[in-house]
Image 1: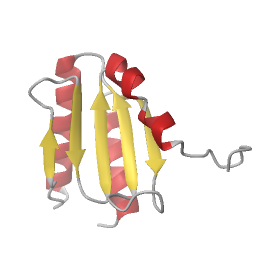
Image 2: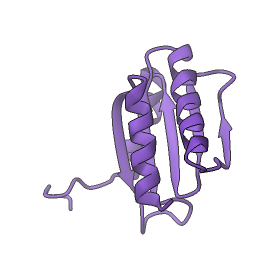
Image 3: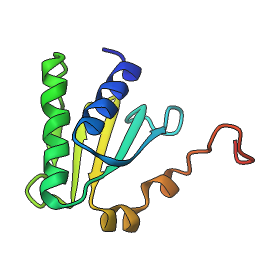
Image 4: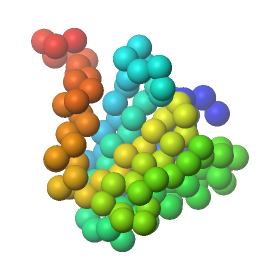
Length: 114
């Protein structure tokens, strides 16, 4: 499965369990580590863990083996690493604090920044 297909699988999986404010950051050419970062918010620690688990299970059903998962014990920020796609699932407070979207400053196509 290529990075584009994996990105779609991840987004669909997050939407299936009501992930909030899903944003895909295209970091190709900006990062040698991954092509896409998917950032999503959950409404509670339990919801964050459920979102991460759903992504993990859906990926395995599609014969995609995740490289790892971190943060599932605390549940305020869970990272699921697929190599070409890295998924960040966070509580709104953590997402606001770390502000990955601004950190990576991904220009929006058609804006003055692109």
